[in-house]
Image (cartoon, rainbow, N blue to C red):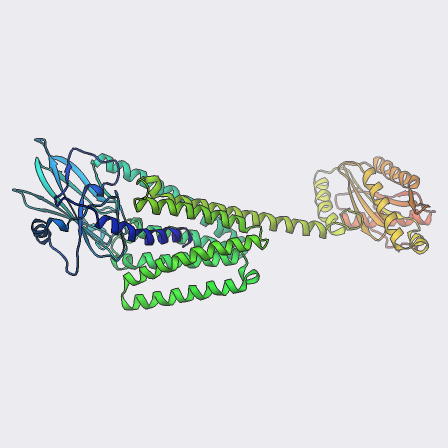
Length: 588
């Protein structure tokens, strides 16, 4: 999972420092006080105190007694977001909420992390029954106090002081952005998050669908791997931000516990498959290719073992351990492929850098190294969008180059390499289309066959190299002499064919005569030798809607034969007689 690997690596390293700073902070042994009238604009866990459970789970009464007996157990976060790493044990947050007014104040308390397994909210007011709310992805959606993707509780704080306690437990990374806000502010934040994720998932689904259609059309596996790569990113993020459980599997608690590490594996595997195929590492870097395959197989095998043993925390640690390694290898693979001359690797490298920068900003945000903002928190997703778009541009560029190569190959197959004119294969499809059009509209059209007189003598006297030069010079002159819209092609050997759409018999004869005259005046110089040639031309016209192009070409060929018999260097015209003659051409 390339975009999140640097994020995971930074979180793993920085979490150790963050926890040490938080737990070594100087405290005054008192429970913090929060004014219920205050609406915090962002995370505010630094306004709370916390303590970590040791070996046994604590009850509310146990926590209360512990604080009264030994206030020094309370620690005070220095960051607005509390982070404590993977499977770090349950923690308690505590604060006193003071309502100095005579009216109740409704507030929403939420922990805006979707992967936390269980969050218990306790509100204790003197003279009232304690209130308990529950959330987290270990609880089915319809059994949560508020059926939302993130743990939340709405509580009307009465006048006076209320003790607020939260117990948070998860095997996943402990990231606690606590929010204390009005209902309206919470709805506004949720709407912003919904808009953001709609945009992210919309882009990803569009890219995935586009790539899948390319795979169906082109049958190239890189497009399938890219589609799986972007699709698995959506599935992976939906598994840990709570959207998946809120919309797709609201009751599947067991699946939710294992979905993040499993989908991380799927994302990493699809990203690996795409990268190796896209960068052609099997051919260009076989050793690195085998290394990736070995790591991928080993990762999958260890995950299966963790699943069989029911070790969710170990599976998460495994995923977070392998992730930085994949990130480094991905960067190395992209850089080495770029240096080796793979022009498409630049997109891969730029995309990787975008995801690394985004992941670094998010890691710095959630660990408190920079002020917590929504933009900073979602930077990793933005980086992934940039990454995915750059990779799609790379695929589009690859499609374009393949299409250019295919078009060039087709053009070469339809072009005579010596003269640059269309060959028979290139001429016939276009000519048949024009012939059908003029036939339907009952328009004039003529066909001419052109042959260089005594060309064999030139080859015998001067050699084939000079013969080719003469052929090229004559072809160029014929091309210059043609009218716009006429189709000229080399038919074979020293023969050419000409299709003249929207042309009467008289006009066709004028064109043919101009061709004959221009070639007669043409001089080819070769090392001081002057070579002149003439041509013979046979012309026919379509006089019936039942005449086909093949029949017209055959009739023009008969007229060419007639011009040869009558002395060469002339134009012969004849209409279709209803059946063609098959007379061989005489020797040059």
